[in-house]
Image (tube, one colour):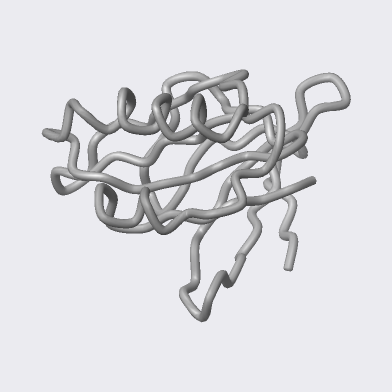
Length: 121
């Protein structure tokens, strides 16, 4: 469901992934859709939603997550093309990572994060 905001610049989208509802707020910059907010956590810079994108939620106090992710991507031969993180809400932070290709196996990541999913647009 898309409900336009009164100023017309943002849409509110309710998305359900693996049976879990996620409240997603985004806009369009030029012709690229961007993610502004996920479940109440606002992204410092809007994250482009184009190509394969990996989205995960982790404890904000977990500094080793990005090196772990880049190591997995290197093994899979996938390049990290963009990285955006949200503000911290209840000690947790969302990250949106643009990839050169989808990651075929998320199981290694699942032990480091609270939730992870991929979108391919």
